[in-house]
Image (tube, rainbow, N blue to C red; front, side):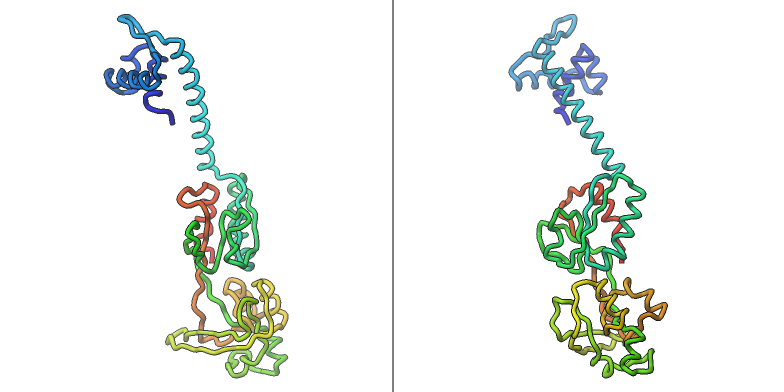
Length: 297
C-alpha cells in the first residue's frame, strides 16, 4: 500500500482543495495540510502551490502525481491477484507420501479437491524416506514420523493401525486347518515380511483389545520390501505374514482374502504428519490441501 501522505497528496491533487480532500478522507483540514507539508519536506520539493483562491500543482507535483497513480494501479492489481488466489487457489501443488498412503488416501482426496478447484494442478510423488520428504520442490510431505527440521512446519493429520495378517491359502499351504485361531507358536515360524530398513529379527509389541494385557514376541523375517503396496501384493499372493496398515487391508479382511492373526491383540496406532516449508505464510493452494488432508487416515 502507498504511504498515507502520498495518498493524501493524490486526493488533494484530484480534489483541488484541502477542504474537499479532508472531507473525502474523513480527516481534519489541518491533518491533511500537515501530511502534505511533511511529504514536501521529505522530498525537498514543492508539490502544491497554495494561494488564497486555489491550489495549483507544480510541474514536480504533476510528475509525482502520475508516478503515484502508476504505483497505485500496480498495488491494486497485486491485491486483486492475491484476492483471486485466496478465493480460487491455483497452480501446481506437489505432494509426497509413503506408498499405500499416497495411492489409497492422499490421491483420492486431492483428486476430488482438484475437481472442485480446476485451477489446482496436483502432482504426486511416492517417498518412503522421511529424511528426503521435502526435497524436489515438494509443497506438502506426508510422513509417519514427525520431521525434526526446524525450518519445517509439521502437524499431526491422522493415524492408522497396522494389522498382522495372512492369506487363507498360505495357512492351507502350512497344513493348518483352523483359520480363526492360529496360535503364536505356529505362525511365528512362517515366512515374515518386514520393511527393508528393519533388522531381520522383527519385534512386536501388542496389547489385548479388552484388558490391555501386553504381548511381546519376535519373528525372524524372510522377505523385505520398502513399499506398502508391494507388501500387500506379496501377502495376497501367499507370500507369508505381515503387519499392514488397516486402510490397506480392511476390505480384504471383510471379504476373506486375508485373515487377521491374534485378533484379540492390537498394535499401537501410528501417527501421520503433514510437513511444509512455508512457515506462517502458507499459499492458498497449500492451505486448501492441508485442510482437506486432515483426518485422511
